[in-house]
Image (cartoon, rainbow over all chains, first blue to last red; front, side, top):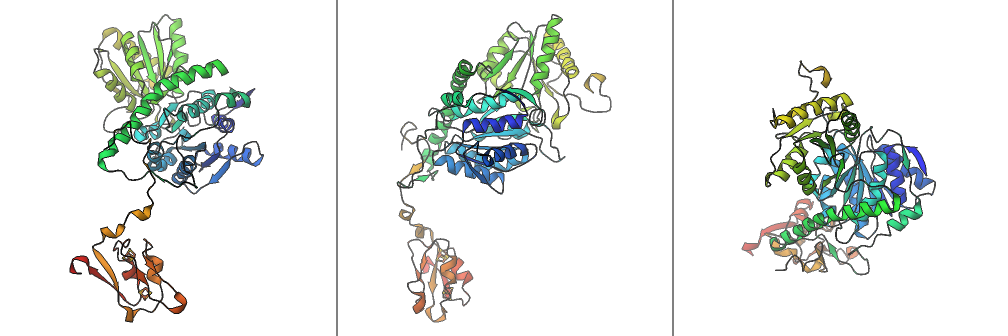
Length: 398
Length: 93
Ligand code: SF4
Ligand code: SF4
């Protein structure tokens, strides 16, 4: 059934379809309507779950962790400062190997206070042991939730995962979304079976102290599980396509990259704008493409290496800045390519922080810049704050 | 030392917490001065390790310390309204 819904409604419907036994969340703009829609579903009886009201995001995550430890499916949603408040508990979820799933609405970190999109909230959770998927549209928000449970609950994985949707561009923007049939979702996503769980008749201590002679081994097991996620994502994406007819390209979503000479790489809704510009430039005979960083953790370094072998230059667009260095994606891509023989110029474009609009004309300007770099093989500079008002901002960056 | 293949997915143990005798951590030992005690049992209430027991409050029995678990934090002594608990260094015993 097709419905016109916001990203937040898609997330709430996704939660309903995946039937979590326990949901615990705390409202924060612009995630609030997810919490409200779920409350409506619980009130009208269309979603049978234990909806636990809490006083903070830290407690919401704690509630999900405890419930997950008892072997049931859990869900939560948050945004920005809420996600930062959860941070401590995020590490507990992955360390205890609990497949908690959450939707995070990407919002800037204050001050300056802002409720608009920025990816830094997600980037700050990079090393928590969670799987990170960035959605490009509302359909992908919903579909990724179904896929995420399947990936996280696999016994070769057993890790938590978060799906990121851009504030307002997705959270509050309505788009047509195909709502899958419940019976099909049930077929795709059977009930969660825990490998180990708390049992009141057979009490055990979970997450207990280990001495230094065993800590590394437990961490290594998380690393292995995260590596398993790579093939699992590709496998689940293919299964999903068979049943629902949609696919998202697995780890790295490539668009018109086969014969591309220079490509833009980045995440979130900006990718849709880039897609549009790629089509326009292709009409003009320019060999351009888009590589959408759909999965941030585990990082698609192999896919990026493969892409980098076939292009002359890569431009990275990112709605986040890692203070003291460069854009977070740029740093990771550089790391992925260093120990190879690939030597192509890569330029980092910091763009659209705190919800600043990214328009097709901006992407055109970036592609123009990148074309020069691709043709000359020379990088003018590594990093550009695109559209920064420095008193002589060119018209194409306004 | 177990290999990573041998260990469970996450640390899980079946050892009751009572098996861990936290009294071994103690440097300062709370010692009751019975004649000062007024049987208010504030010490019993505040002990974070449940190391103090009172057999019969009705008969005004004295609080009793379980040194297997008392960590020697000094909370009981600090809270006692009559300074009836003295913290003594273990080495001096
Ligand atoms: S707090 Fe002091 S006075 Fe009260 S019962 Fe304990 S030792 Fe006695
Ligand atoms: S010293 Fe601390 S642990 Fe020991 S009995 Fe007093 S309150 Fe309890």
